[in-house]
Amino acid sequence: QVRLVESGGGLVQAGGSLRLLCADFRRIQTIGWFRQAPGKEREFVAAVSRYGTPKSYLDSVQGRFTISRDDSKNAVFLQMDSLKPEDTARYYCAARQGDIMKSPSDFTFWGQGTQVTVTS
Image 1: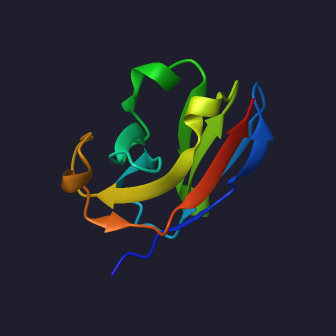
Image 2 (image 1 turned 90 degrees about the vertical axis):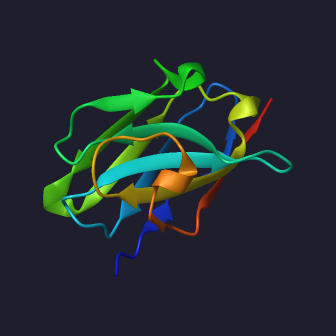
């Protein structure tokens, strides 16, 4: 059984930065970050394959967010810069075997999420 734990969320002003951490996954898995705002569907944000490359991003976060993994520390990071109020959501870490996919239904294991709130 894979247990994913997210941390690093918080309250930040627009233009600020946060770094999210996803821990406790198996090294062989593809890791993705998703987010869900109230009243909206869960959407793909970024993912990194089990080999550290390739990576994939939601168009609206490309150039502002960076996903990376450190298998020696069993950790995947999501560095979020130039945050905008529309980035406000609960962010979830998810894991799957195989290649990068962008649908939540393609991911097998999920964490409980961490809240990110960006004020204007």
